[in-house]
Length: 382
Image 1 (tube, rainbow, N blue to C red):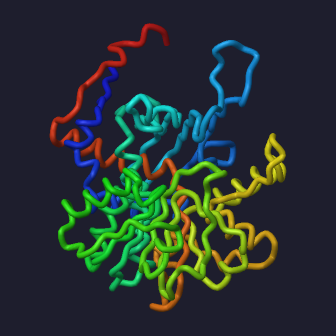
Image 2: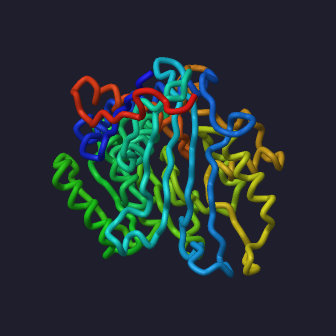
Image 3: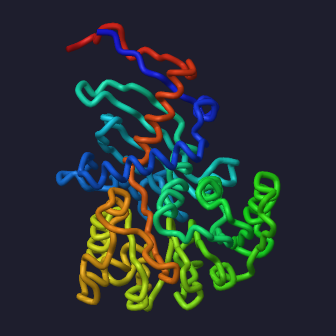
């Protein structure tokens, strides 16, 4: 039996609409609905693993052995199955190295494979840097339709890189009243912050004001919606303070949210995309011990882990942490008061890569985009 599959380059993905914010938001809504209905599988024996990560050692006696000589030095494979209208298996795979910037490359280089659920045969292999960034940015925007105040006027982007650029494109689809955008990069002279400011002025002339903030606190204050997507090393991480957020703010965290006064979250509405994922993160964190190999105290910096910690220490009940999928499926209300402060942790799952990858694959077929490749006409061995 002959097997062909479709290869989609980054240009092909652009032509297939990978940056279509509205369609991506709808795909994320469908993905979370299916997640809530348990119509999915992730990797691992219990079908709940975020992925399998390969980390490098700090040192090795083997000449030329790859070392952990910077943040985000890893390879990761993230297999999954998503049901419903998708009924597709697949995997996101990527390598990450902070030194890529010196070579003019993004820190991570990603690919997604879509496979037939019955046979395992490949259906498509596609460039996934834009796919992954777009689905990541679409998730908080989709959640904002349930969690943010409809009259939001001030948006804060903390970490003005690729993820928040895609998130901005999606926020502007669902929060049409945004008039001011605050930016927080590594400094007021951050090249990424200035590039984001130029992008906003060109793409969204309806935004009356942009501000590059000189501190994390300044970026948080007075914002109706805060979108955190930082990628920083532990030693450069700043701690947040909930007193910085205005009454009624909605805060989305997709990266690093260092916080030490955990009980403060009890005064907020806590929401997660996948509670079990953060529970596993906390378990793995505890297993590694309280200090790193240099004797420095280790701290978790993912918002969802803070919530799980509160539940496991008895400070909160499990029902106090809302599941985004239940809100999407109408089992639980979203925002109930204009004054409540909502904290939402978006960690991301390969399910989202599959759904948005599938949508782009289907559009590519409709438009005759991509390159057909042959796996075999007949398998040489059976």
